Image (cartoon, rainbow, N blue to C red; front, side, top):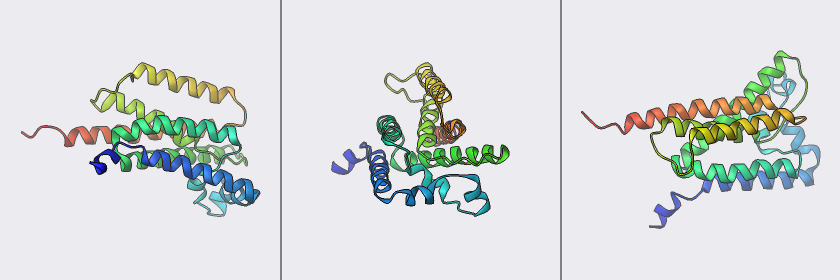
Length: 199
């Protein structure tokens, strides 16, 4: 019974929030050490070959507001998705979204010769929006109070807020959103194919 109850608990979402918070506190005490090792920029990744920054930057945040906003969405939206798809699939979708967003951001900055660096879990968080949209469109399962129109409005508002802000990596947001949507669409189609009745 206990094992069954754990299946529906937001274990991965809670762990991600906790790790992000711990890293943020560690950054406070180490100054530029962790930021310097993890910020995402074209020179460090494409010239120096520090590919780990694509992943590490997802756990760095510039300030308490940046951290709080991302973690709030991550926990509540992530918990809902994790309950629907399971811990492992949720974790895969989250990290694929973050990596996809960072790769698109890197590509954009390389093309525009932009030396700026970025950090944060926003790409992965936007990926969860894409995952949710794919689920309401393709999973064949009804989610309470979640409709395509509501999800699209939420995505539209989130993108609008990003483009109206300053010093925000909107390319990473769009990249995460598209990656999450694509990955979850494939997942939903595959799951429905597996659950089809035998002939």
